[in-house]
Image 1 (cartoon, rainbow, N blue to C red):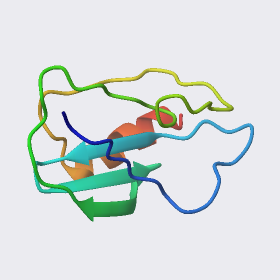
Image 2 (image 1 turned 45 degrees about the vertical axis):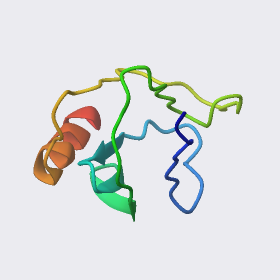
Image 3 (image 1 turned 180 degrees about the vertical axis):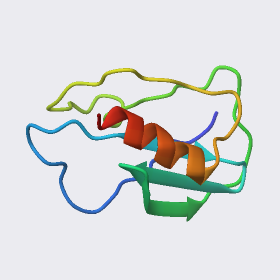
Length: 92
């Protein structure tokens, strides 16, 4: 009964490099981070149904030219400082 919501950053991802990508939603604002830096945000209010589908790496039915590794879903929203710290750990 819901609608598809997506958030995309401008610009392409660099080929051949691992990139840390994180997304957050606090019930009011959806945010997208790339390598620990905020790259896009938009207002998005509503609720998340138990049967909601989570898609990473592209919209459902859309292909992705790349690999996903170490995907995590948290039950709480991480603060920006923790997202930046995780991005630094992943770049080692």
